[in-house]
Amino acid sequence: MSLIKLRQKYHDEICKRLLRIRQNAKKGDYPNNADGDSKISVKIAWGIVNSICKNSYKYGNLSGQTSGRLFEEITKDYIQKSFDLLFKLRPGKWHYYIESTISDFDQYKDLSEIESELNRNKNLASIFGRDYIVKPDIVISREPVSDEEINKKELLIDSKDEIATLTPLRKSNDGNQIMHASISCKWTLRSDRAQNIRTEALNLIKNRKGKLPHIAAVTAEPTLTRIASLALGTGDIDCVYHFALYELIQTVNDINDESQIDMLKMLIEGRRLRDISDLPFDLIA
Figure 1: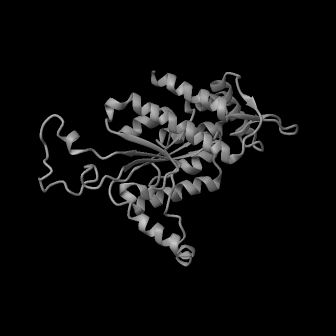
Figure 2: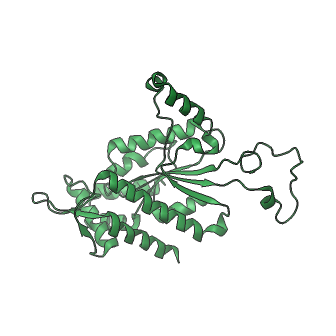
Figure 3: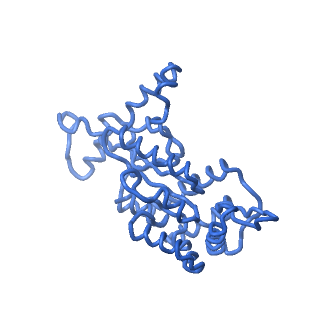
């Protein structure tokens, strides 16, 4: 399967399983990733929906929790299938999880002791909180390699050699999976959600021991100002990825709203916003 067909399939799954048209007598019908109180949000959302769903969408509603979970699952499947297609560019044994605790992975394994202590001692938990025990929406991890795999073509290292005894990539040293990427998935963006993503990202940065994972966010938010609340600035997340950036660009140009066009141009040219199809390539880099 080509990557463009895989992207189309990703959108097909969203149209079939996740996207719903809310019916409202006063506001009019609008997609469930739009803010019904914002005319520009509704306009942009409809433009994207009409482009990716080809008038094949369902009416109704889904709870915020259900929408979020479905967006995570569909996006995880897309990333996993993309990695499979690009395997020759980044070989390895990869694993994909939804909402897995970071202490399960090598860079954050020391947090498991803190987590256990907080579970035992409620007073400590009330003082220190649990904000640093992050559960990313999607985690990609790499399995450490065995000495047999390292020596597949020629003998590079022997089990008796007293070298490379601390690297987590060598399975004989520890065996914990290495977190490769943490991806936040938000069907829509509100100010509190953007702040939560930044807080999680900063916790991943400051609590790691070893290699920093890729830290990214994927959203279907149609409004550029809300995307900008997360995308602008550097130092926490690598980049924000839109589930349908090319359709968003076309819609904003069709609407011809100068403020939206300017914001979109700034985010793209400033390398803070990319399409979902860019994500697998960036994760492999």
